[in-house]
Length: 317
Image (cartoon, rainbow, N blue to C red; front, side, top):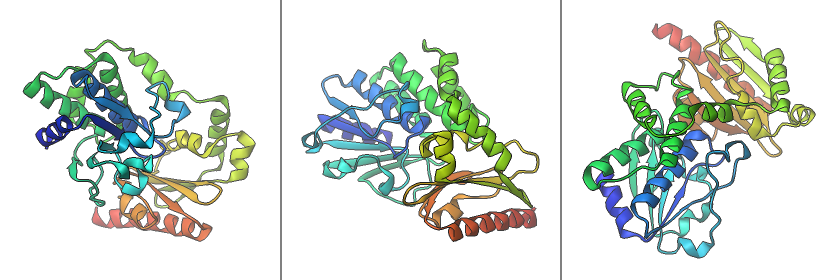
């Protein structure tokens, strides 16, 4: 598959790299890390990264602004996006050919060429593996900026190597990337710093989240609460693990009210949650997923389904 991707890259003069809406560090690390690799090794090609900016992640990289005409006859590569509907910048449909690179379950098989590895900790890990293949086959080079982006993406999707998706290969790749000259302390500071208003909302979350047996936690952040703390829905995502270390907690969910929908963020230490997310216009990893609902009744149904998921896990054990 890596060889097929390289052949496609070599066929096109213009390559535009996308990722999912509301990006996280892995989405940007993979998207922009791949861009760095291609720019270094194919200097005569036009390489662009597109999508909306997230102010909390502009320290990683900034997006390019390009006209619709750049997509004509171009190759599009989409990173870290399980569902076609979540691709940021819908102009991908104007391109001639599309490659999907992802580590989520391949339920939405969009794209002309698909490379999915659900065993990878992150798409940033996959992009580094792609670089290693290119290095062996065609003497690819990796810039320090590219290494920093891929390392940041891996750190983000493994929770600083604490999550169960961290493998021996993940640690080996991270170790190799650390041989490049970048400041890890600065990366961690940028990734995990909290603006004062978000820190104050964190106190609210810790005081108001609900816990129900057998191990489900949840909180509902209304528009009024976010207005009170002057926090945007996207900024609230920084707090998704605020009460994750509570004793007995096995799965938890954030409900974030937006003007026309309710954003749902699932996390788990055991019960599978992506199958639940899939029922509510979402999906993702077995232990970390997202969804969208539109009524309070649906949020109540989700809580009940999480309770049932915990009970089923107890019965299996």
